[in-house]
Image 1: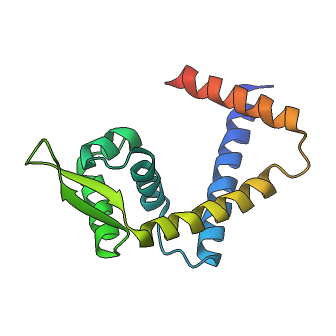
Image 2: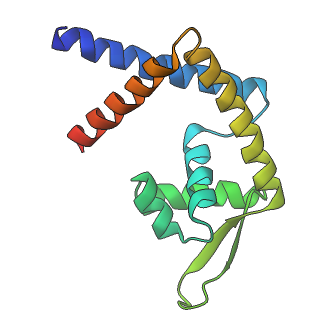
Image 3: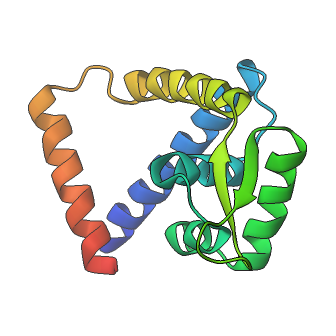
Length: 140
């Protein structure tokens, strides 16, 4: 396989996947961007955590994360509480509404993943995961 073919295939896969996710989110009436959703998932995985943790995990600058967090706070999806050890910092966690929103996100993603892997054997999926993780590691 030529480099151009691999690059083009990866590019098309990435964009088709993102398009399918955005469509599923829209159909589920989730008014969040992919960046909001990545931020919410990072909070769920690390909660309670700080904005700095989220910036590091998502590889975004703190200003971007601050804007995303403001949107999520205004929508009552996350809440801030005082950091127990650092008065300058605040801890982030999901509200009950935020947990419900992420449950809807998870449902959308399961549907897209089912479409994505339709007709694929379990061994092929495992090989894809193994190879994609190796490629990501190689680039990092």
